[in-house]
Length: 244
Image: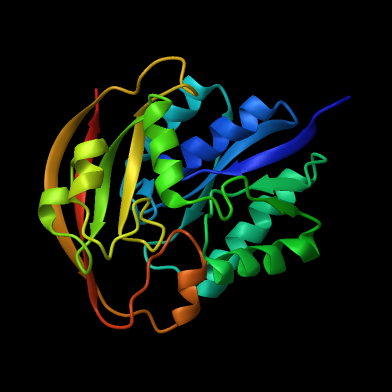
């Protein structure tokens, strides 16, 4: 029986990697593309701040073609949805009508994705949905994945967490109010090794910077994975990763 053609909504982080691993081991789906939104002005993954060059190296090591949604520096909801719809239509024209997400328990986000994709003839697949985040983190580490924290929400975590490797020590140090997988936007990661990669992704750790952002006018922006929104001005620590 032929496999179902899909594309993966790829952030380059921990949940995406574990999700892709589950899909690839199922042998039910054929993942044709990794789809990521980037900040075109800075040539970096939206919100995570990872350089697009490292994203390409991930895709090369995985062996799945990368497709990019290029967004302006501060896109509003209409701009984001227009670019997303254009790219999804481009992909679906190849007979691909399923897409994969690494969402775990955010009901409103899942509903938003499904509502936007349904009119385009795309069905969402959620392999991690409603699995305990502690269980997912243990599985991630047990499988031998390696990841580094590239972005930390200052509302939840201090600078010391930015640039750390995800291991049991990192998990043990997380405050009680922080989800172990960062599902509420507490942190974002970059995966550089693991069972989905042919070879590790080489990089050097650069500087850590702090950036503050004003509350967006359109609070619906929290429904897409490229922008993290708070009820007031908010700040993030970013650890730059330099390709080598």
